[in-house]
Image (tube, helix red, strand yellow):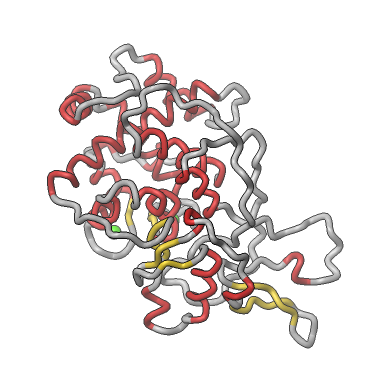
Length: 324
Ligand SMILES: [Ca+2]
Ligand SMILES: [Ca+2]
């Protein structure tokens, strides 16, 4: 699943942030493996200690992404391969998973427990693209430093409010005005559709899309009226959405399903949305405002209905079965 999101984000770097590039997305040099980073930022409401969850290791094979900094940065969202299943667990920490910002230690009875990581033990990061900006508008050297700091503030109001805002050092982000806000979903929808078509075209090994998903994308792919990927005016994007509305329904649902993973419950938490929004914010200054207004009832979660609505999908077309 991570691979998907990474892949998506790779394409985001190409397609959304740089809509002027109209050549097909090509595979470029392989990504340099960043040091593993433990888990996502924790959900806003969950304060209790996390149960031991064995996460699947990331499958990196064949995963090649471009050299644009944002694409490299998406490695920040890789989950660490913390569980070494083949090793006989003499040290109980070998099979004990701690969330980001915590490390495993054994207590007197040799039981593993997660404690806050000392930020000074985080690998030194001097590269700018490894820096992250917190919602406190402070730049942290790396996401490791950020989550370790957040952990130390656990239980406090300040810690509760602190989230990873975006990838890269804090910078001035221009306010998003209304007409810019209305442009955001136009580009995003088109991009989602193109991502899916690209996945379909590349899916020789049948592992990028399920059979059901492939059938749905096939219909879009084979539709002669499909607006080809490329640079399009906002007018054309708006016109295409109106005319070929049906082609956009599945891509919007599909993206929701990609993000709704922890847990799969029909709602996106701040954490679940982070892999999409954090790399986008520095490039698309309406990102924060867009996703904030998606949460129409202001309960801090974006429900499928809210998500679909902010992408212009009609209420009667919202279908949980499309989110796989
Ligand atoms: Ca969820
Ligand atoms: Ca909501």
